[in-house]
Image 1 (tube, rainbow, N blue to C red):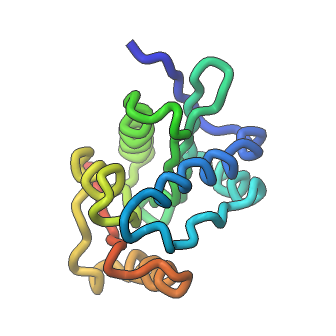
Image 2 (cartoon, rainbow, N blue to C red):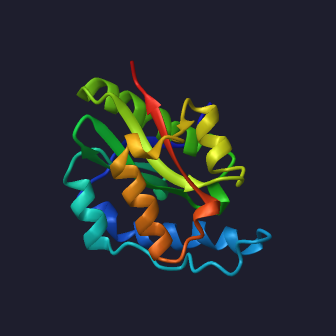
Amino acid sequence: MNDWSLRLARPDDAEAMPGIESAAARIFADLPGYAHLDLGGTRSADGFRRLIRKGHCLVVFVGEAMAGYLVAEPFSRELHIWQMDVLPQFQRRGIGAGLVRAAQIDARNTGFRALTLTTFRNVAWNEPFYARLGFDEVTALDAHPRLAGELAHEANDGLPPELRCAMICFLD
C-alpha cells in the first residue's frame, strides 16, 4: 500500500518545487564523475507555474508534505518531461515510477503519441530507470531535431554530452 498520493499540480505548488529540485540534485555530488557538475541551478517558482498552467504537471504528497513532482510540456504530438524530482527522504518508495506512469496515462489519454525527455546515461535512477518504464534512447537524433536541440542546449550550459541522452516512450 502506498503512503503517498498523486494529483495534478496547482499554481501554488510551484513555491515548493525549487527546493525539491535542489535537494534531489545534491545526490549527484556523491557520484564519481558528477561532483564537478553545476547542478545547483533551479527553475524559478514562476518557471514552474508557467509549466503547471499547461496542464500536464503532477505532484506527490506524503501526508501534507510535497515529496516530489514531474513537470512536462506539450510539443506537437509529444509530451516532454522537463524535470522529475523526489526528495531524498522519500525515494525508493515507487514515487518516481508512479509519477512517470501517471504522465504516460495522461499523455495517452490526451492524444499524445509519445513522451520524451533528456537525462543522464549510466546513473541508476536516470537512463536505466526510464528504460524500465518503456523509454528507449533516441540514437537517430537527426530524426528528432527538438531533442537534438535540447541536448545541444544542455551541452552549452556545461553538461558533458557524453553523459547525456534523449529518450522516447511511444504510447501506441
